[in-house]
Every structure is written in C-alpha cells, then in structure tokens.
Length: 156
Image (cartoon, rainbow, N blue to C red; front, side, top):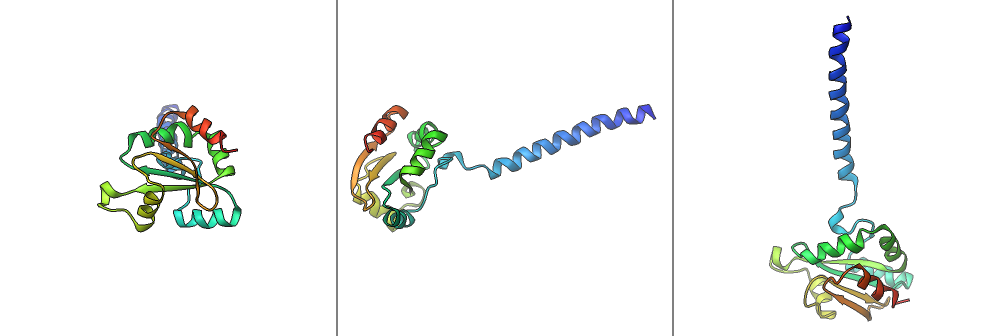
C-alpha cells in the first residue's frame, strides 16, 4: 500500500503542474494585449469624436503601425505604465489610429482622412487635440517617456 501511494504523489504533482500551466495560458488570453497599450481604453476615430463632443474631454490620437518598432517602444514605455494609462484615460479620449498601408495596400477612409488632417508623416505620431479636434500639441517619433510626460503636462 505504501508503494502505491508513493506512485500517486508524482502523478498528483504532474496533474497540479499541468493545471497551473493551463490556468496561466488561460489567464494570458484574458489579459489585455500589451501591443495595443494595456490599460488604455482605446476607441475608434468615430467613437472618439462622439465621446469628445459629449464629454468635452480633449483627444489623444496615437497614429501607429504594427510594423513600427518605435511605436512598440512608445507602448512599452508610456501606454503600458499603469499611472500614465490612468492619467491618459482620465484626461483624454484616447484614439488609436492604426495604419494598414503596408499590410493591406491602403487605409480605411477614416484613417486616411485623419492622417491627412493632422499631416502625419511618420510613426509614431501622437496628436493632442481639443474636444473639437483642433491640434494643441504633437509628438513625432518616440523620444522617451520623460518627453511624452513633459508634453502632456504642458496641456494642463
């Protein structure tokens, strides 16, 4: 009997390990996508315009592209920082504008119109605009978290 219970312990440990790994994988699918700026409540351009008009909150447009390495650096250094994400969500209507020119050969009409309106020449470009869409500040490229925070603080 003692020998049977000794065999059961490794099987029990394996079952526990498999359960923990499966749980971790399941949780990973429930976590926000780090690439899309975990913690930021990104909305579409149309929804952003509607929310800004109804709330009076200024807009933060993040013009980005999947292939853009500096865009991913901006996400990691700014948009995934819980304190900054909370401040952005509180003070702005955050709108993510994803460029698909390279992947699909063209952008949607809404994306193309916004890129033209704000003269977006490269990625990342962050535009801070008032609730009506008038540009108040801009950051072109990624120059670090401190620079982003300085520009955002200047908008108070």
